[in-house]
Length: 109
Length: 117
Image 1 (cartoon, helix red, strand yellow):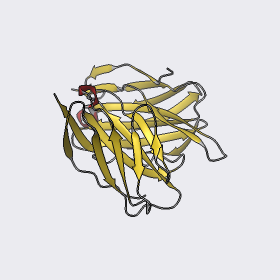
Image 2: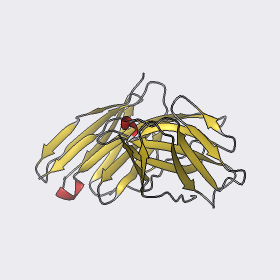
Image 3: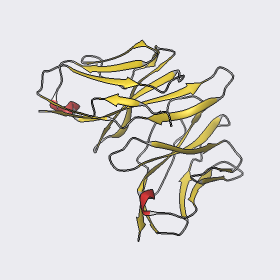
């Protein structure tokens, strides 16, 4: 399995964009980049995933570098409800999700 | 929105007792996962099933834990006998994987908070 590296914690001002980085330098050609988040005392929530193209949905945007060795999750206008632990995971399509420690994002009023 | 349903939400029991946790996956999903979360270990994958068949249970202590899918709408995780170190939040997740290589991402339930005294 490809390993990911994320900063343990980040702060973001409410209303600003939150940019969460993830390094996955050993990613294989068939592995996708997935992002989940876990709000306190809830189950993890799927956010977005992609292979090599940038992706956008109603929650966030995912920017993957051309060499696929890193990616950035962008929450365009962070709110207090976006305070959570964000997990970046790389895995083949359909394979089990293995979680690392993630990034604890604090959105500050 | 369709949801993964887990019961009970909370369970407190004494060590040595049998504990059964239940999960109702999203209708139509063919893959079910069991995770355990503690402060020390984070989220750990215990086992997962596809089309009700176990694919991987290497993360599960075999002597006391067992996972089954009696039917497509029910997954169970049992601990017998339970020990204080089993105290954790247990999450179930379901997803859809198709042979053509497409899939829908995993969706998680809100977990069972287990305390073994």
